[in-house]
Each structure stands twice: as structure tokens, then as C-alpha cells.
Image (tube, rainbow, N blue to C red; front, side, top):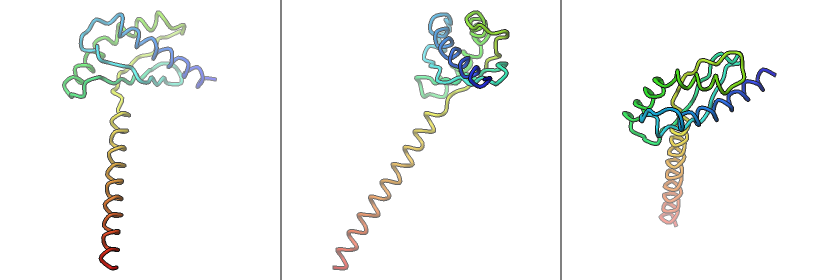
Length: 131
């Protein structure tokens, strides 16, 4: 039952934080930020909020992180007003690295495909030389 409740609360936090960042937070550093996932501990005391940015520049990502950290008090306060739970979870923002990881896997697979194509071409050429 606790796991179901934690999942429900995390979905509510995800929806609310996206809305808060869009409508309430006026910091220009968080304009290109999208919340991708929220993980809440079983006791609902802490919530890790994963985000991505539109920009791939490290300096822009760092600015977004600082902007999110600066606005975390406002975000937590707004979450507390919207959620119907006894204590508002402490929030932490963390950059979502799953997209980067997926791109890395795609690159590795592409390299393997190129290698397989090269190996099959060299096998075909060696067969021609033998004939």
C-alpha cells in the first residue's frame, strides 16, 4: 500500500512541479526545464525530481541547476499547498541522464552495425579472391 501511495504522490508532484515552473517561478534560468520523473521515498519525506534542459551546453545546465536550487523553497511551498499530505517532502533536483545514456547506447549499436557491415563486406571480398 505504501508503494502505491508513493507512486501516486510522485505523479502528483511531477504534474504540479511542471505547472509551478511554468506559471509561478519567474527565474529565467529555469525556462527550458522539463520535469521527467519524480522518485519519492516510502515515508514520503524526500522527493528527488529529475529534469532535462533544452540546451546541451554545460554552462546552461549548470545555470538551470542553480535556478532550480534557488527556487526549491517556493516549489516546495507550492507543492505543500496543492498536496493533501501531512508533511511536504523535502525536494532535491537532479539532472536526468537517461537521455544521454540512451544516446550512448544508440552510438554503440551503430558502431556494432558498421563493424558487422564491414566484416560481411570483407568476407564477401575474400570469397571472391578464393574463387
